[in-house]
Length: 496
Image (cartoon, rainbow, N blue to C red; front, side):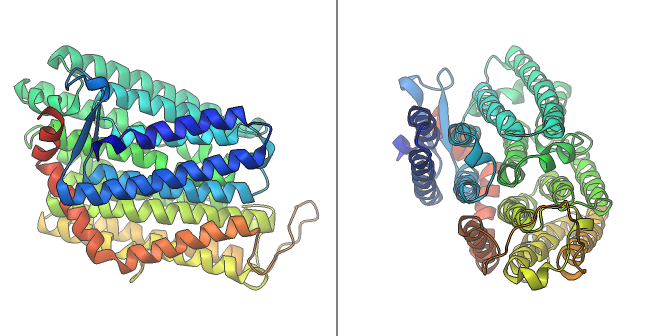
């Protein structure tokens, strides 16, 4: 089973190379992309089942034993994220093939997209900080290209903001790496779990805060989120969907992994994390309410919902972290679905500006349903997928007497519902606004091209599956949380 660990990284890289070789045939590129991501999805599911039954798995590249060599590790959290990531990447790729725009107009889309997929998988699987940096750079370099692909001046300008902030974050990350290596003599995560304990308490706390800052930029955590609402809405809908669903969650994953693996109870910045979580929730949702564009509203909600995940981590209890992991599962599925539904709205109406849209409940009722279900799920309306993880986080907060953050989370849920109703009213209920310069498309029964609609339907169904399977998923999240707080199996798998 250990031999499967490199495949989610290696296969997309091979697929990217093949896509370049067959660049004259768009059909061949598409077959390669779909086949590679489908294979990665199957491998991820197999690894998830194996790890849940048998415990963490580790592979040492080239036979070099840890902590000297390159280590790939899969535990429950890793395989949960890997499975979700591969499913989202596959669904969004099919959507991109059906959507007029980036994938059709640019021959390099498939190869760059597969490099992004390899970077995402490597970020989850790597067992040392330096290769986490390499994985981030692989992922971010591909995202730079996708973000500005085929764009005009505004898209390139917004993409430059993303590039500059990402480069600053990368510089800060490599500086943090150098400091940690100087202090401990290792960058292997399992090895660091033991060697961090030998450092003075003040230095451990400083490293904990430094890593929150480094990964907080990538996760769009308050006050480091300002790059996201300007960068994401200008990209093609398919690109925005995969960014919204995955890229910030890679940052959240890194925060979860490092804060629980490296630092003991005395050096964890629990209070700071709870303060940042509350501020992230509030600022994100207030920013969403102030917008009049579907993509910008949904982009600000990426920021807002990150706060719930950090809230669960800040509690540093099995119940809190289990709620955070389940919330990540829910959010990846729902947020990707919402951006795909937003892409359908833009395709049909010719715009994502609320003032230029209206009446789609009559002209595109199927698209209205595809938007409504994940929108209510994002707000946490029972029995949809957002209800159970929010309830789990609230219960964990009340058990730990963290009443203020619980109150903030409840208020933000109500404001999230308000902003979703705002989109619904403007896009679907209000009368159609006629604009002679606005390009629209004839609406089919499905509400759009089949390859755009079918992946959206599949992800809506997956979101409903998350809601109906909430019990088993919460149990799995609880086991993953227990592994994080007691990383013995992770360390043993790597170091023996």
